[in-house]
Length: 395
Image (tube, rainbow, N blue to C red; front, side, top):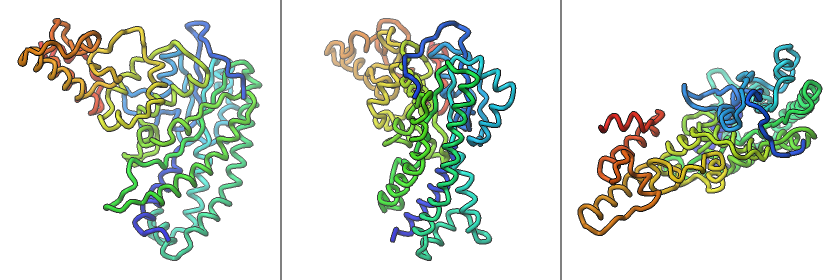
């Protein structure tokens, strides 16, 4: 039997987790400045949870691919709602005019029946956590989970039918534009499996496998659609999902890094190269030291494909790891100590030196390190750092 505290975590996580909402893959190319991107889908595509100034994945696509973005996504949408939207004349006109269509849909097809199943079993005054706790205490949790799986099966099959119909309807209106669907990611990936000093890795593993198996039944169907390019977001998020999903804020929508990675996965699935976004670099700069260290190298490399490589250095990135943080300031201070105090000669040269010379006076001084720390402080507190503003502060 699973430990009580582990079940409470499982209950909370599962209740939150399900609240988320092959065409030729020839390389996509932009033909004209007026090319357009149509976004359809649920709350992920609607930008739920993003603050003012934060980019959704569609913003990165628009910037990198030089596309005009039309976003018709609706928070809470299911596949059936998207089919209803496609019946509307305004949506049909947008589909006909689109040069690229990107969709996130399907997660809510599981959420609605999931909630209905649990609501029918709640006793007065109970929430979902109380329900899971009671079922575990009664020894019926495993049986109820098996019943839930059977209950959800019909809804999963209906979602698969609707996905096929979505493809058919869009192709009737626009047979040529690349059509990209995102796989539904697994939100049950946590930055820690410990609770009150006890490791519940087994419990979390059970939850993660359960959700992955259920979601993969929908994701697998996307891969079977003949004219759809699949952007495998689930695979991209797997292993370090907490970096990409706001699970630490008790939400299961993408973080700003998660949106950036979705965009990179979509562009990579289209074999699109050449476009860049400065905002991707800003997001990488804003990672905490621990998150920057945790970020998988293949994910970083994918993101960096869409950061300009034409510039031989990035101001403030002394270490050259695509992140601006306290480590860069430390390197500047060490250079200053060894060259100016200990007379050991320069520690930093080339582009590392140039990246650390914030005010471009040809020297690396304490002031440069302070400005790098100021940039880092703004980024980790949710702001958008600006070297111009920081330079004004330190004049």
